[in-house]
Structures are given as C-alpha cells and as structure tokens.
Image (cartoon, rainbow, N blue to C red; front, top):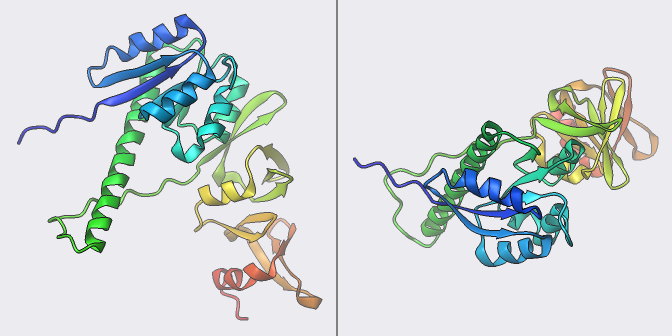
Length: 270
C-alpha cells in the first residue's frame, strides 16, 4: 500500500525584524511539506493574515509595532488561533506564552535544533487537530443516518496540564502540577499553593480548572480548587456552611452548590 501524502503545513511568520523573518523562512524552506503562506512585520497584518489565510501554524513575535503577539491572540481569540509558537528575545515573556496556551516559544537567538523541535511539536499538534475534525465529521454522519466506516478513529487521549510556568523574582519557574496542593483565586489571577510556598499566575481559576485532570483536582468553591487526595476531614458547620481540612491543616470553604459532588468524591454519606 502506498504511504499517504503528508498534509502540507501552511505557516504564517510574523516578526518585525527582516532578518528574523528570513531566518525562519530559510529554516522552513528545508521542509518540502511546509508552505509559508505569509510573512508580515506587525501585529495588525498578522491578525488580517490569520483571518484571511487560516494558516495551520503561526510563528508569532512578542514585540511588534502596533498590536503585540499577545494582542494578536486576544484579537483572534485563543480558540480560533492556529497552533502558535511565540518568538521572544526575553525569557521572562515565556510566562505569557504559557498563559496564552501557546504550543511553544523560541528565545532569540535560537539554534536550528531548537527550531526543529518546535516545528515537530507544531506538526504533531496540527495532526491531532485533524483527527479531531475527522472524528466530528464521522459523528455528524452517524447522527444523520450515514453508514459508519469499518472502524472509527481511535479516541485521542486528552492531555491535561502537567506544568505551570510562574514568575518568581524576575525569573520563570516551572512548577509541576503534581506538586500543587490547592489553588485559590487572587482577583483575576490564581494563587498556587505548593507546600509552604505560593505562586501567582496570570490564569483565571476557571481556565486552570478546565486544564487540570478532574480525577485529581476538584473545584470546591468559586475561589478554590483542591487536590482531592489531600482532603483529610470534611467539616459541617452551623448555618449550612461547609469546609474541608487538608492533611497539612489548611481549611478551605466548600460552596453549597458543590457540597454534594464533593461528598460523593469523598465517599461521605449525606
């Protein structure tokens, strides 16, 4: 059987530095299955190109005239963005890349090997998105009475957050999710509690809840997410108030709307 022709990867390059754009274009030119659909030098042009050309992958500079790379993502919307790899001369901007759900980021000056690693990750991400799209088409066909194929595509396992990038004393620190005890809302941000340390991240509690493994973490209050295995005591107070006490002695409030679900998770009889 002939091998299927790989999908041609359509790429946008957005960088205000001519040498930067040419460097990326030269590296991409070494791949026969990659097509550079546009090279732009500012954020506004990047927004227009993404909307009109719908590239699979965007190499997006952080600092550009007009809208920044962050602004481009916010304008398009994370859900409508192509697979995104940020480019930056400043390592501290890596935090923002994680916040905006970028696939990867390249810190200038990057070498060829690091670029190839980012491109491989992007290609894999695009392939997974294509699998999801085909699965959606299959489900639609089944719902409208279409005949199912001999075998349905395998369900791609959902990937949950494994690391969170946080800024500490001007440096970016990567905190493994396995070390997080609980998370509290801190205004529009979130506060990670890791042992006796705490870190502020520019993510909302809602966003973190959606990206964390629900088998491990649970939202118990509008302002709190907890690692279930660390819950030691479930406390019923007067007036319908509830709390949990963790193994380290920390107490966290439980909202009434989430009490029943928490009791089920803990095996507590109502």
